Length: 273
Image 1 (cartoon, rainbow, N blue to C red):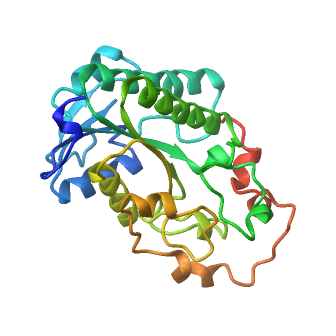
Image 2 (cartoon, rainbow, N blue to C red; image 1 turned 180 degrees about the horizontal axis):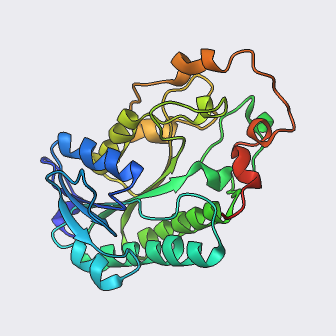
């Protein structure tokens, strides 16, 4: 690893894959506002591209990904299918694409990759099991979809590249990253856009990063995920979902409803479009 892996006294260039998407838009604008030089990789340049550098191409194309990593200090890998799909599509974009990103980072000498995982890698856990303790990162994965399986693969791939090549890796199990929670379950998993920027900035600047898994959630009073891994790396969420709780008060609760029973909610019954 180069000297870039040591101290970061000044913010440098960060590459965001999937930067034209919803999460990508939040991070490319938010991180740029914090002083990062942002380079974006996506299949298209959006209308609100701003002043960021853009590389147009497919994340599964090794030459494109490698070229995009020139002079990059941090990679945020977001590109992928964000919901259930047929396995061929998941295999192409989420599995092969993630391999190409990790492999190119090592070949390009990029010291750190922040990988967008999902809380759906543990979606088949029943909520009742965590009434007395938080769900930790040491609890085994229980994906609720092939999408969740692909994200569990990415976490394992990051672990391999850390152990084999010394790559610094943080896997973020992103919750409901929306302006506002849309369901009662999202009161637990809500991840505000501002807190998302705070977390990725903290992970990009954390000293002595090894291999980490953290939950991407805000400071929600009913959150079931353990916040300690993120807190240890400098993440201090400023938002919480309690201000939206009144919207769901008094609604009927069916204990057999997947949205009530499972941490992954209706992803446990999702099928490809």
